[in-house]
Image (cartoon, rainbow, N blue to C red; front, side, top):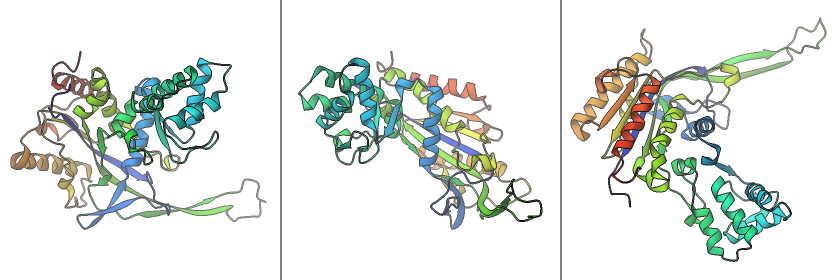
Length: 358
């Protein structure tokens, strides 16, 4: 059993993004939020988690990842076909999912809402279906057990059957700019290549709304929760993959128009045994415009605020790692990306409760 020891890893990132529309609302405008009485650029947590899950594909094995889809019949049917090529795979898949308690609209449409399923869960359901199992509890347990890495990190909610829910070990905040922003408009035209030579008009007119910002990004992982959900031996490597994906990923909104993919100006990771600590309060008072830009004063503001919080409330974290000039006072020398990932993986492995990591 996992001891009642708490272990969290907090991720703080400052990242400058050039003119872009990384994440837009229903009207096509870049998302914003009012914080500290000032309008800020915003990128939703959902947008960045999607980018992270896509990056997981290159960091983790395929069998470690889940699939979120309405077409879960096809997933289970594929596993059934591999076990019993002569069987009516789709019919058996529908029956197996119904036995597990899911409402399947049809073979083609699948479930009414998106469903998150791991490869292991699909394989387990297929095995039960091929064996002709009549125990509904066995089908239900097949959907409860063997969650994927991304399911353990980001959770699964099944409104029709809460017993299938998984609590998320990771929390990801909406990214907000450290300063105020005002959206701008790019007026553009497109030329019709086949228009007559005497036609001087444009084939299309349009506008794209955009802004630029230095974002404060934050996430935290409850390592204790993650280790309880998954094979604990995997947890340090999974935290490494999470860190790399959080630091290096970028949502793809309007990327072809703006080519806005950047890497962080500063990264600050902490290992804590008390509670997660979001440091967004450093920017409740917006960083004012200056000739030095926003990144440098934002780094100074973050470092100063962290020290203030540690002095007044929580004390220093158990361990901390940084990348970027200006952050050294929080952890010593700035590290390279690979060194930071190695240090994080080692710290998590050492601090998990004794006996939980082989």
